[in-house]
Length: 62
Image (cartoon, rainbow, N blue to C red; front, side):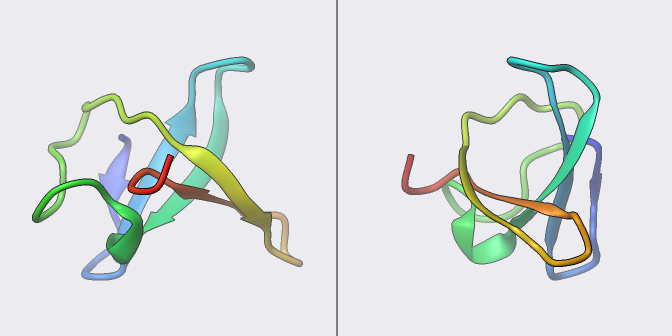
């Protein structure tokens, strides 16, 4: 995980299959309670590509 985006969720960086691609996970799609620490690795699945090019992921229902 790269950083928290306020109370909305977390910005992450894809590391597999292609490293370096930015993405976002909404707080309701995070596993467990609260936000993971910066630097944590999360397993997630693709939810959607937003019209502006942002990749949205789900780390809760994978």
